[in-house]
Image (tube, rainbow, N blue to C red):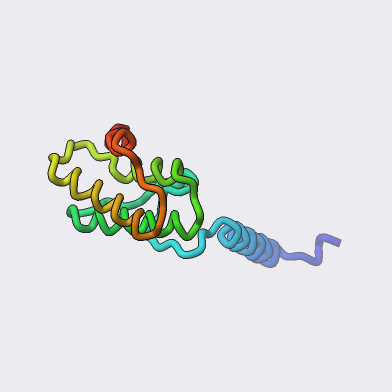
Length: 127
């Protein structure tokens, strides 16, 4: 019975089955609406983003807040996501922190989301 199957057809069958298996896994775990530079931290996912300047960082934060609003994520999840993106080995100066905090608050106000209070904004910069 097995003598009718050649090794070539066996390996081709294995490759086809593996390809189908990984395609199904990819489709099951693919997040809708995310791009390579915009893997958000909502629901504890890792972020693959290294901003080159402050403006790019602020834009990424605004996109993250919009995504959290669309996904109806909790404020705690958004806080964790922002904390992860703001994790930086070098401590930014006060003017950059103020710009980023005001951008966060204004974007959340624009989307009618409850903003962070002063204590939460301070904790946002701590790992």
